[in-house]
Structure formats: C-alpha cells, structure tokens
Image (cartoon, rainbow, N blue to C red; front, top):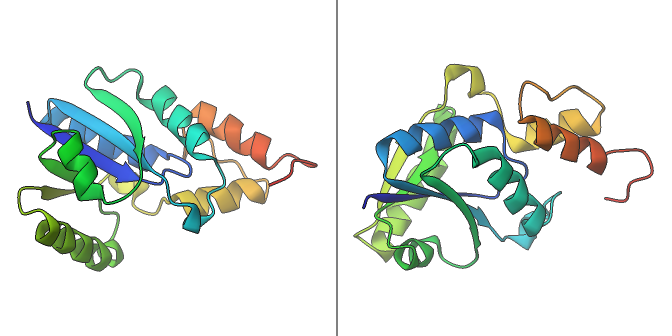
Length: 163
C-alpha cells in the first residue's frame, strides 16, 4: 500500500491545502493529513480544534484520514508505514525552505521521499496566515476555506471572544 503523509500546522486548513490533499488522494492508496503539534508557533486553534476541522474537510475522501503528531516527521512517517511526504508549493519563495526540509528528512531517513505538489493556480497566493488576518479584520474568507472553517474563524474573532 502506497501511503503518504501530508504534514502541516493547518491553522486553519485552507482550500489550497484541501486541493493538495485531493491531488495526493489520486496518487496514493492512503493519505494521512498529519496535524503538527508546535506550540512555538502560537496557533489560533488548539491541536484538537485543528484536527477536527481537518477531519470535517476530508470526510468525503475515502482514502484520506487525519491524525496529529509531534516530534520528528520522519519518525512519524515510519510509524505510519508510509513511504512519502507530500508538501505543497505555492510559489518559488516556498521552494528553498521546502527543499532544505526535504534534504534534511532524506538525511535522517533515506527511505522517505518528499513529493512536491502545486495547488491550483487560484490558490497560489493563499496561506493560513493571510486567511486569519482577513478574518481578524472582519473580511469575507468564504472563497478561501471550507464553510465550517469560516464558521470557526468567525467564532474565534467574534467581539468579546478571548484569543
């Protein structure tokens, strides 16, 4: 079984992330969307919230599941009996950082390959950081995220809601 891990903080999951997941689901028998625990990033959504948002977003894809992890990604890949890491590339600016990560992961475990996938061109500008900023300022994020993610963002940024 060909298994790929699509890791990220997904704070929150965007339509760009979802596009990469759908593309990966066509290429692999099993795809695990792995939500990373990284409190150093000070996420808007808790790990449990991010995991739930991802699960709701991928429910229609039979060969895709969601999980969370912490620690070294290559160790998680081995525990999941996966062979590949899927990473999305939006622009040339992403490439240098992603290339360094891929080479480091290869150095840590030469049996794990990194596959770079590009989302649809309509999502190349999209990032979780930008979506959060638009939502924080009261903008409409409906075209950038699934509906339940939009609802969760509005709840986080509702007047009087502690962040």
